[in-house]
Length: 73
Image (cartoon, rainbow, N blue to C red; front, side):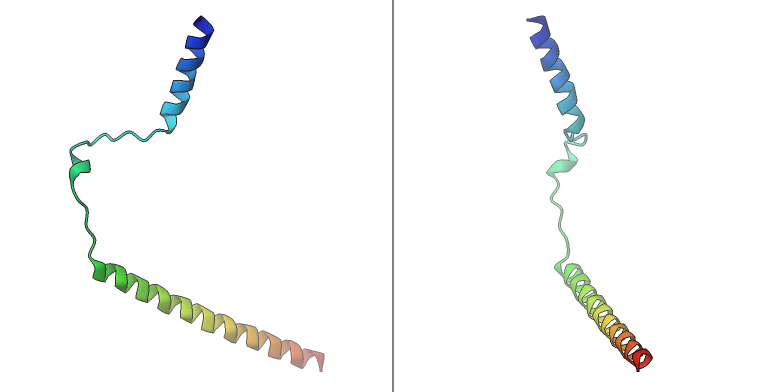
């Protein structure tokens, strides 16, 4: 019985390390809200950045292929 109790306590200690403990119980009752316009603006700016990256990459790849083609001939 002593070994079983020791294994349970060790197991409980290991599991308790990885559990998230809520220290502020009163704050967890508050409802958090986010303005949808802020989220939409973030999505738009992310899309613009991605399209710019794609254009720059394709221009660099095209220039690289053109230079490589000129070096061969």
